[in-house]
Image (cartoon, rainbow, N blue to C red; front, side):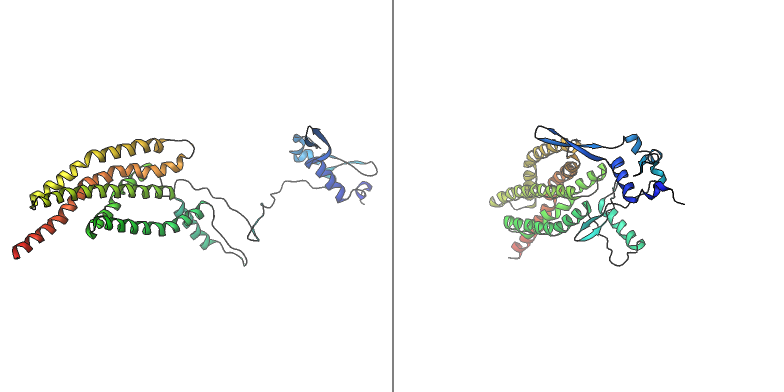
Length: 321
C-alpha cells in the first residue's frame, strides 16, 4: 500500500526541491549603479554539508502533507565521474604527475615503459604524454639540429681566421674539456640536465671558444714576430709561447672575474624565475674555472707540439736541400 502523500510527490518535485535547497534559486535581482547582482536563496552551509540534515529537509506535497526528503529519496555520497574534456574531437581524461628529485626525461621514459607493459588499451583508446615533457622533446629535437650546425659554422669561421685545419681543430677539440667545469658544478648543486642548462652550456662553449681563439692569436703573433726576425730555433718557439701566454693572463683573469661576479648572484638568488636562471648560470660559473685553465695551459702546450713538428720538418727539408 503506497502512502497517499507519495502518490503526489513525483521525481520532478523532488529534483526541484533538491536543486532549490542545495544549489539555490534566484528569487530576484539587486541593482547597484550599473551593476546587477542576482539574489540567491538556499539552505545554510551547515545543513548542505550534512547528509543527515539533508535527509531531514521538509517536503510539502500538493495536499499539504509535510514529509522528509529522506522518505522519498536516497541520499548518500558517491564519487562522481572525473571531468571530461575533448581534444582533437575525441574525449580525453588527464592524469597529472608531479616529478621531483630526478630528471624529467628519464622519469617519463620509465613511466612510458611501465604503461606500455602493464596497461592494455581497448580499441579506440590511445595515450599521449604532454606537459613539460612535450616541450622538452621539442627543444631536444631542435637542439639536435641547431648544435651540430652551430659547431660546423664555428669551425668554418675558425678555418677562415687561421687558414689552417689543425689550429681550427685545436680550438674545437678544447670545447668538450672546457665544459667539464659546468658539468661538475651542476652535479654538485644537484641540478638535472635541462633545456635551461643546455642554454648555459651553449653560452659557455662560446666563451671557451673565444678564450682559445684569443690565446692562439697571441701565440701566433709572438711566433710570427720571431720568424720575421729570423729566429726559428726551438728555444725561440718556447720564448714566443711564453710571451704570448703571459700577455693573456691579466685580460683573461679580468674576464673571468667579471663573468663570475655577474653570475654568482643569479646562481644564489631565490626570487621569481630563479629556478631557470640558476640552471643557466651554473654551467657558466663552473666553466669559468676549467675554460681559462685549459686555454692558458693546454692550448700553448698543444700549439708547441704542432709548431715543433712543423719546425723540425722544415729544418730537415733545409738540410736535405
